[in-house]
Length: 178
Image (cartoon, rainbow, N blue to C red; front, side, top):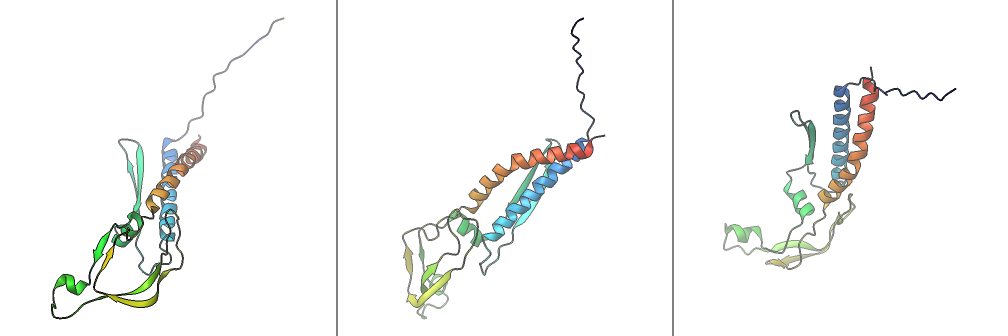
């Protein structure tokens, strides 16, 4: 009597690479749409509504894909990236269209920001208080602190991507087993 040990090679069942790729592209597009929704949350309470776009591209020769989410809106860029020190003068004084007309800036004295640095979301806010007239304003501190929405969302998406791609790969393999 002896001991018999049998070894059988484990052969994976055939699966479709096309279905795996399709599942991964769908997962990437879904993640991109979630990032777009987060961007839209940052402007929920704004009167000015930036338009955010999503483009998903697949590069066939490298076997990779890329999603681009963003906007060309200048105002959103000012809030996201911030605005440094500046001198503000009335438009009429800058254009010099009517040099005889005295011009002044008109604004309310106080302002509560609708967004916060590093927070994806928006709240009530805006101008309030008495109306003030000035010939010009020198902002010594940064006029708009950079909110960093893009930085926060990039970090979040990079944390989500590996898990989502692994799940999409498993889903694609399970759909494509022959």
